Image (cartoon, rainbow, N blue to C red):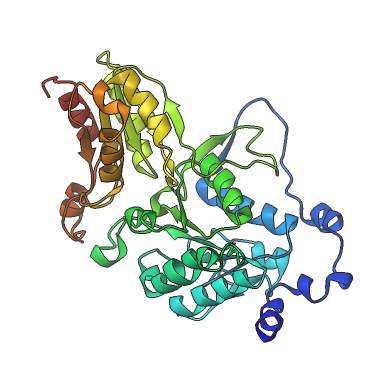
Length: 372
């Protein structure tokens, strides 16, 4: 009871529900407005899509709140939480001390007590200080309680390499958390991905690791009319075929989807029809869609920004080899990954440490037995 009383201060609706305005009234007061309704897709940055997802879910459910370093008064280190403090107040948008283990533990405790926290890490590299809270306290409690104690917490923040931030700030944690039963792991690419998947993550009764990319925050993507709706949610565990093709399958996640799409455009000029699959979800992994594609194209290239050993691409390769798709392969599966070294700080070396469009084109041609 003491814990519940403490956490109720973060979401006052639990302790002062009778005094709180109705959901309809709050929605009318805070609802987003759009300038015009048109059949043309609306352009939206990844940053704004994430912000919209949190705002809409906080309007929808008063047990949802945000906490993390500089998320409130500073509007977030990357301005993803911009404006939320003004709209929802300091009891639902909470600045924390610089202690990842501490505020991640508080988020897990809040989730176990019935709230729905969104815990922002300034970078997933810093979340290594809190990995026990994420993996053990959040990831395993539902199973260890016999399904009686859900833990609806979202851990989110930028993952993978940015620019010029060197070895300790550049790791991709998709494979790390993707190995843990009890967690769901999401790695979105587009603004539509970010909005639909973050809303799904907030509503999910299990802990979700939400891996964003700093280099994508300012990138604009088209948003369909459906995606602009407050009710737009994408299912976790389903990937998306971004481009259909018949000659080779390219599977990527996060920023690597951008490079893969560019590579597909270049290959198309040479008469090669590449199918590009955006994973969206790391765990659960939608291997069925990949199998279906490989059975059509007979070739597979995986692309990721993480290290080559024991990575997401390695897992996809293993599952393809273990499936009926193996008999359809006309060439070995190719993995395109980051270099197997701590990320260099020097720009000329950093540029060589991660995949780019020309490298994906080169590897795709190699899989097709074409000269480069």
